Image (cartoon, rainbow, N blue to C red):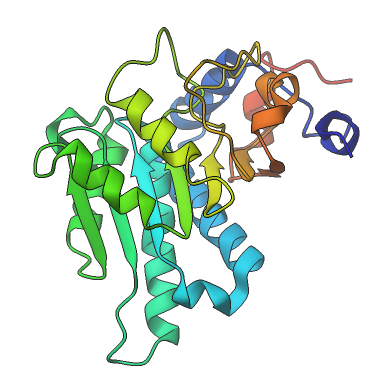
Length: 250
């Protein structure tokens, strides 16, 4: 079944543009006190829940690698890894360590938002999650870590992507795509590199097995369906009223 057949026409989930989503989020924070860190927490928990539903307790033996960029897309992935850590450790024997790692494709002081910074700091305190950064590790070390993954969480770019994809992101995206069929690739919000509005698939674009997006479908999910994989749309607590004046309701 095509994406547009299964979701596009479901009331309340119809596709919107990245700019409309941006306006909705900002109204949620400025007018309804729905702070973006709450949106991030809800988004990350939905991602973790999706993986737990997909894999069940088989996830206990999987090496899960999150690849995070500088923005809130990476922040969502950080939250997901925290939730996964809490679940996995609670199910494991005391002498078994979880196999979770976060790969930050920047220096920590380059993170763009306060909510991403907060979740990075929390992650740094969690001993069950190994962290690699471009400040402390080489690109080759990060790529080697990705090559060992059973599940890859793509949190590199979100719907705010602009312009040409440069290094080290091209190399990392290619490394992830080379794991296709050997690792399960889950994209946060939208496959990194896919234009959220036009559906343009850049030379370096994640080819996901599944994508978990938030609030509503985006136009790019439909137009670039070949790299989206299974699509799941989750509400994350943003008040419906934030859509007034932004989304036309029938």
